[in-house]
Amino acid sequence: MTMATDDAGWLDVESLDLEGQGVAHRGSDAGDAAGKVVFVEGALPGERVRVAVDRRKNQWERG
Image (cartoon, rainbow, N blue to C red):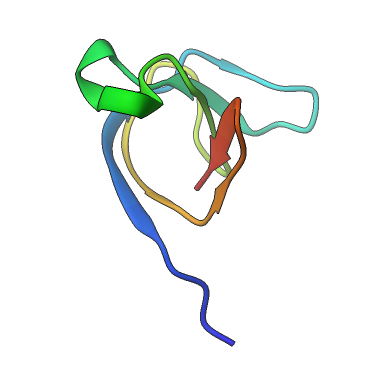
C-alpha cells in the first residue's frame, strides 16, 4: 500500500526530540498548518530541509 505524501516545503530544523528526530515548525504562510510541529527523521539542528509529509495529526506532522 502506498501512503500519500504532501510537500511541506523548506523548513529550518530547530532542535532534536528525545528520539533524535529533527524538530521544525511550519511558518505563518502555511495556512491551516501554520505553527504545526514537523518531525524530520535524519535532520539536524541548523539544517534547512525539504520535507515530504507522510503522517499528519492535529498538532504535528512527520516527514
